[in-house]
Length: 201
Image (cartoon, rainbow, N blue to C red; front, side, top):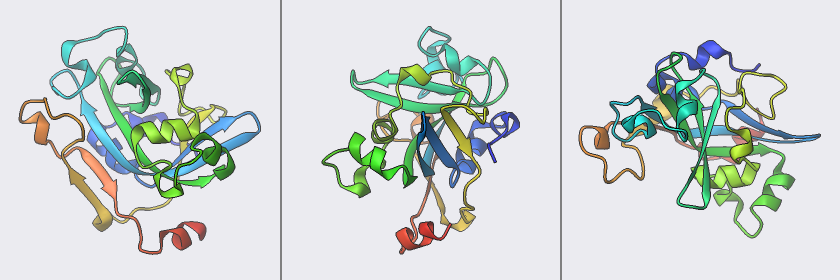
């Protein structure tokens, strides 16, 4: 079942935590690829000095101010696309950055998009997973709550709370405190026999 709009209308920190274990799906015609979300970061409004909205609304970040449950996709370092889910109330700029997925479907497609890369490194980073799934600016603003969307998030597996960890967010070293140390990165520990465990789901 696809995640509802109300799922995303909650606080961005709650959404980031609850996205762990959900199934991210990329549909390209008759071909689809998917993976379980294992790592996500929350970015919370103009007061959050690590957030794109810290200087107010711009053409680049305008999607963050829109409807919850939309994709906010931006380009960074002149080479990478990043996938975010817009959260909270309309007009409030908050989003969750999807950082890592465990690929489970469409492995042939993913392997072609990540040719020459070890499977364990296909999707273990925000730029890696967008390359693996063919996610670019063409999908910016796409409705993640539409069952026919080429990019959507569905119910997945339950991640036990005792396996979810938090830490400071990654790659924001120039951000001042307290935002630098906010524990708004959420990540799930992989099971020891994760390949076997995921294959049973």
